[in-house]
Image 1 (spheres, rainbow, N blue to C red):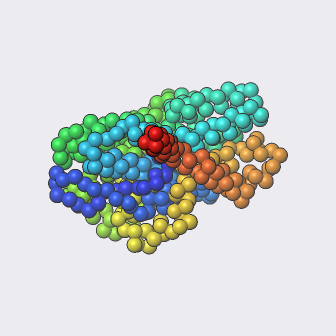
Image 2: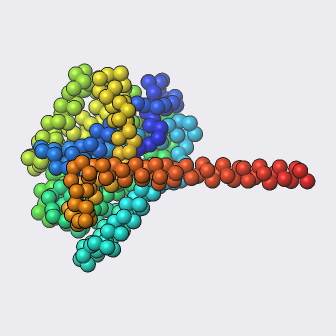
Length: 396
């Protein structure tokens, strides 16, 4: 889930002739979409009535991440005719790891002072799987159900989404780089073949695995492996402005409220009819509708929805969405009395919401942003040092 906000979102500019490079620029509304996604997660974890927004919000993050990361990589290819994989992975690490390490330090402190021996062992494994971004597979093997109501859920259970995102960051740039080495539009179509295959196979795989009685196989079909939602975002980024895609897009958005209506229907039917609706077509319908509506929002910033997504408070929540997502489970999803026993009021509204928002702000402004700027500061310091040495030598 890059649940993480990127300082300069990009997207493809209007259509250009076939075979020419494509320029990229700033796109409004993406932070607003992040805000909507994280608010859905908060409503779900906060126990809002009839809220299925948690799973929907997570999948919105996945689609947005696939779209944004693919657009960024395509933009670099258009400028440099290459993708600096080391630079991409380093920047992702600087963006995501500091906040995650802070969370793990907090969980370690809780485990040391408050956790029972059995819970401590569990938290240790949860922390290691989170640190190495394999939490989704860890929770599958551990028979952990993120969507079930349990008395003592792990404070790191939500990090399965971060694991999926990081696995995507490792694999997808390699595939895209290999495919884009082909000349012209053929590179894009070669790259599009991978997400297209995943999306075509996903409904059959979900039905097959989802109906298995074995927990491991059932979890593979239903939980913790939402790679197909990332692929929807990738496919839109790769194919937008091609004639076939634009024709489909125009038909799907002729009535602008059609995609969000499909998303709403899918969210209502999600939990009730898993075997008969969600597994065979529900995931696919929801993912496609989210992808189309995301693109519509970025292309219509002057619409009512576009203006709402660019409203300053919504944008601020979107900018902080990764930090909010990291910290909110400590206050909303787990049994807060275990952590906040001396201050039980912290576990109830509005103190719990203020608590995770305050921690998110601290994480973003004190930890995350300075980490992103560290490389620039080090390079600047080296330049100043070199200039001073050169000046001292000239003075001799």
